[in-house]
Amino acid sequence: MESLIEFLDRSPSRFHAADNLRRELAGAGYEPLFEGRPWTLVPGGKYCAVRGGASLIAFRIPERGARGFMISASHSDSPTFRIKENAELAGPEGYLRLNVERYGGMLCAPWLDRPLTVAGRVLVKAGEGIETRLAYVDRDLLMIPNVAIHMNRSANDGFKYDPKCDMVPLMGLGAEKGAFRAVVAESAGCKPEDILGTDLFLCPRQKAVVWGAGNEFVSSPRLDDLQCAWGCFRGFLAAGESASVPVFALLDNEEVGSLTRQGADGTFLADVLERVCAALGVDRAAATANSFLVSADNAHAVHPNHPEYHDATHRPAMNGGVVIKHGVRYATDGVSQAVFAALCQRAGVPVQHFANRSDLPGGGTLGLISTAHVSVNTVDIGLAQLAMHSCYETAGAKDTDYLIQAMTAFYAASFREEDGRFSLNN
Ligand code: ZN
Image (tube, rainbow, N blue to C red; front, side, top):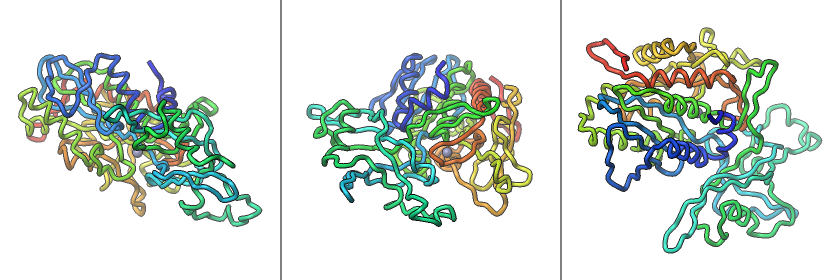
């Protein structure tokens, strides 16, 4: 089994992450479904659909029929910088820089003074049509240099980053016009003039590592949310059959509000569930009532240097188990909390709880957004991590296995609600 570390290193962009999972699913016998074609779904069948290149939904049809869906949703994107279409900034002084814009709410400082490159996809002319190629320039290509302390003596007194000036990556000195597109084309195996469109993003070159006195930490770019995606995916693959359809959803664009065709505020999940219901001859409303969604997106661990940012009685610890998130920006309620806690108990996985300090708004995630389209009982969970939205984040090395165990138990169960009573049988 591939490890989380390998998955992180092999997924420099959301497109790579989705593609890696798609490939593994194909190898495990999951049939690709294309949204533009009719779907024929049979008992015992395993299926996978991709929308927008970076969103993927996989599911299995139980042999004995199904009364609902057991769904997990996590996100494939992370805060980064998008490369603008006219990417090259020539000068000053013979420098070649790249014109970028912020994607999501990142911490800016960690992006400086570390080797970077670009990853994403390019759309390439292919005969009379167009084809998608993944692009990853697998070398140290870019750097965003700091200003020396001698020229900005107040740099350590709180610095306001101007994205159009301070966050511009340097690519070359004396490089020719067109150098960037040539490098991208080479990585995608095409000619520069055949590139018709791009979705390219900065990515740090630093690999994922396990570290600490007892190897208790894992650090990597994109831990939020590929750690949860990985945990849910392994649980999805490992689980035995139940009376529900297990659904694994990886969705793009959470970091910019999910309001895209392939995001949690689009119709992807709803469309897939509707087609499954139609194929099974199951009433959609009844199936929705008998369904449960785990919205898995990383949570904040208590910071070693700033424990005061956490609520007095909600202080998640790394390696302390799966975190259930509570508050107005989360979908968790008493029922969904109880259901998920019971399944974790079944799996022998510890559970901890997060709530914002009462004067802090905190962040939202895809649980509530998804619930607006697919109104199922939903719990928001995550794994405790530090430095969320840094380009190099830190989490607990043991927690991924806890999530895998919890999600294996989740996918092996079915959910049914009647008159305030809930059953979680297989
Ligand atoms: Zn996230």
